[in-house]
Image (cartoon, each protein chain N blue to C red):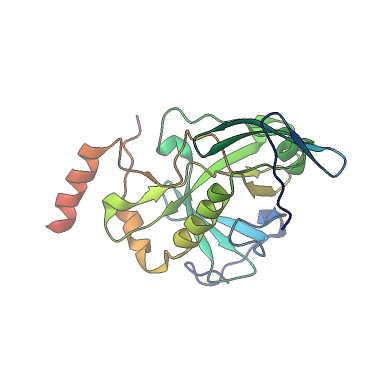
Length: 76
Length: 152
């Protein structure tokens, strides 16, 4: 892993077209500005990990299927 | 062969192709949608490559009134979405022993282009919708009534 030190308003370029700016530093939080082509998906990693975890939990449904019969939505 | 419905005939045009699989299940690329039962709002999303893999899903209209999000241009292109009328939005349900702990993943809806048979799970990185939204949150009355029924 490459580790760089940057100050506020300094930038990092990744490849041809991704630019990351340190927008602000505040009390342990770093605010980043990211310019990248639209086709690049940018996500907070913990959110992706959380969705993976939840998908795995959701797949453990085999023995609980009968629960579905007890659920009714009060649709208007 | 399905996990919950035994062996059923699947037509080629029922197969939805997920180019990237789903987060955590990247190799599961082909699914079919099977209604859980007559009159049931639930739809089982059965993997074709892995018989043991099936997700329970429901359309968000059953869960929450104001569910709005934007699909990025890139995802629209990936799923070849031409018209909003062609898409079906589903949310994955996580079942729990206790009915009240059952949640829906509102933060990562499944988008299916019914016309092109392409699907994908998108992640809404906007803090607005929960990965674990308790589906009975807005229907406390109904769920406690049902609990009574169950315990009888």
